[in-house]
Amino acid sequence: MKYMLSIAIVFALAGPALAEDKISRMHADSMQSFTPETVQWKDEPILPKGAKSAILVGDPTKAGVFIAWLKFPKNYPIPPHTHPFTEVVTVLSGKLGNGMGNVLDKKKGEMLKAGSSFVLPTGHTHYVWTTDEETIVELIATGPWAITYTNPKDDPRH
Picture (tube, rainbow, N blue to C red):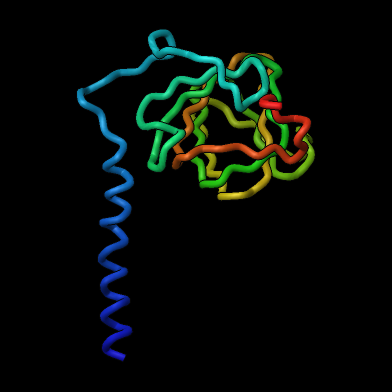
């Protein structure tokens, strides 16, 4: 019994240290400010054509936390898909529709305005869309980041 209690205490104390290690990989060498006008927007190849991304901190291709901005044009859909890790998405400008399920159905989703956030659990199928205005969101997630489209034909990499 003492042995099991000792192991539980070690894991309880190690948990925060392991989390701190993942977060410590996300660091900056100096104070930085980011604005939509000054970040370096690049085409985002794993999303349908038209999306742009700017990596602010970290590296989404490697293990560890990263922060990115994603810019979507007006009337832009991202078909149903999943991600391997939990994500936190905050709408910075515009509006973003968000729904859960294997079929993009705007009637079943919700419309989020600037300042709104949502959390996507690991492996939950969801979809997003924009309305009649450009939308910028902030994505905070753990890498390596990936996307698996429910319908492989929706994957722009193929």
